[in-house]
Image 1 (cartoon, rainbow, N blue to C red):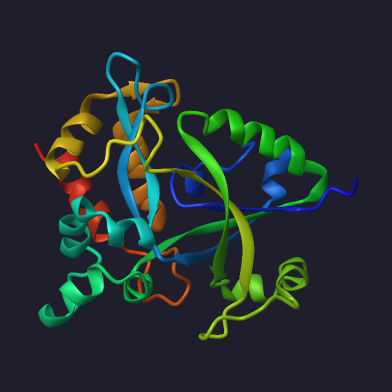
Image 2 (image 1 turned 135 degrees about the vertical axis):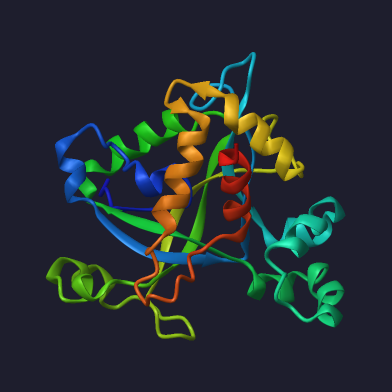
Length: 247
């Protein structure tokens, strides 16, 4: 059986905490910036291990697909507040319940790791353990926005060569992503952002303080967009950071 390289999407801690980061060879993994369409990122997954305990569960991120957002009215208010904030008022109601229209409005920036075949199995086993609290794997299309330096790198060019392109001419990689689905027992669902902030401020788990997770994620998105347009900015995370860090 031939083992293929692993393409892995990170939208949370993987952006700043590489897979197999304790191994020196992880420095050779290629990290490509970009985004996925049709999802919203939220701290709506509880954590009883990495960023909390069974007695005091923390919060970690997951991404919620547009189809579930459209059909579940309990998600609408929060999505309208953040992801649809710049949409003309007259188009909001028609968009929030229409999966096709909603897909185009939802973008989550992150990264895609190219993990060589010789490390693919080890990386998968590591991630299955790291993401064990409610996360499952899915296949997803990741839109790559490479940096100028990466475009000049022969290894990166070899990866991107021959890939299909999106309407913007950006390479698209079929990748693996770990998602906490809305039906897993640790999914909190829509939570008032102030309540989320109160939890994150005080919780601590095996991987460290809950607020560290949030702050590192927020910081890692700054400058992630190679265009300089700061398209990776996440208004929901902006508000959450402000609430967590305010005196």
